[in-house]
Image (spheres, rainbow, N blue to C red):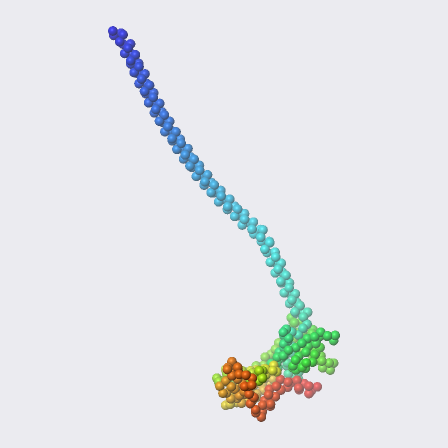
Length: 351
């Protein structure tokens, strides 16, 4: 009985042992699968991290590459621009500057050595120890100077068979009014030694020299006290024409203009009661005394009624301008106009 049972027990034990082993094997397999699964997850995590790192690295490398390429492109562009544009921009500028410089030098050389015309030069000549100055301008006007006296007028030039001529519309210095004088110029403006030879005939020739004008201005009166009612500019009008203009300044200087004759006397004045002592310069200081009287915007002076410049009286019609009759009217006007031609008349008398 016992021997029979033992095999059975052994069989059961064997079965149980096998069963236990199977369960252990299954548990072990399950555990291994779990471990494998965990390892797989870890590997996946590692792979994901590696992928993340790889992507980040790739992005960093990509940004750095773009920045490097942009910097390289900018560097190349900055290096290429000056090399390409510098010659293109500078050459025309240099050429233009050279052309302008050559043109300026050529013009100066022409003006200095080849231009033989009377304009824009101060000329002078002496007539009976009296120095006359002449300035001809490009607009066809001229100004003559004798002491502190100025004369303005116009001139014309012609090119004829007998040569170049110049004609003044007024008699001044060596020039006759309306008579063409043949002229020629030699010398250099640059060196200031030009000479203009003029001729009316074989018997009447004269030479003007390039020079610098000496201004003849009188010293202002000392301790001068101006009449404030007199200070300003006054005009004598007649038949819509400005005939005379006189300006009295606070410092004692005075300007008397003969508008129609183009003659201006620059001088000084003093006041004694109702008399103005006017002094100007010809060959020496010349003084003349003139009475005056002021009534508002009207000034009686030189025998004429002047009106203050800019006043309502100046706007009056021409028929309201009155000539005041005085015995010395003509004498006073003649005295002023003869001062300008005094030297010329002396010259003609000597000839």
